[in-house]
Length: 164
Image 1 (tube, rainbow, N blue to C red):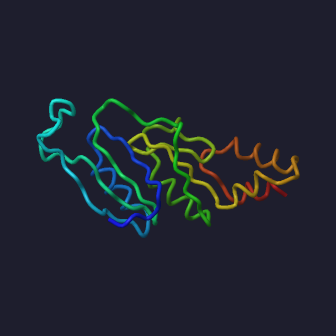
Image 2: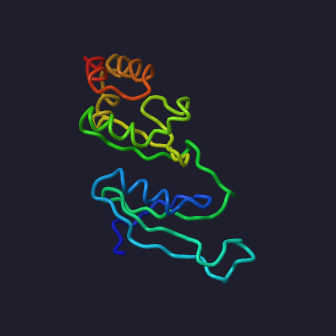
């Protein structure tokens, strides 16, 4: 696989790497699986995976390279790392929010953040979010922040209206 960038996020899954990669590729445009590696006998006493089990999946989401690793249950995802999806329209926000959001845990949704079915955190945000929050007009930023903090899924029109 040709490298798309120098930095490739590696996502540690228990045993769902292939399933998760296929799930994500099915959501984002211009995405595909590049290849898979499998565990062999080497190191089995350490990793405990049966030979033939998927080790890694190299995949691409809308031009961004990722690796999914089946590493066992040692580590789990948390909100310390999330992936921002920059959206140009409310329709895009709605699309990604609906596809990625895990419906079983609405408490994991706030201010455009959500968790997917694998526990990975995503931020579904309007592309102009940075501009709305970095204005030199602090009163404007405060209005946008006040509106933002009341939302789960972000509403572009309400944020723009709050900015004035």
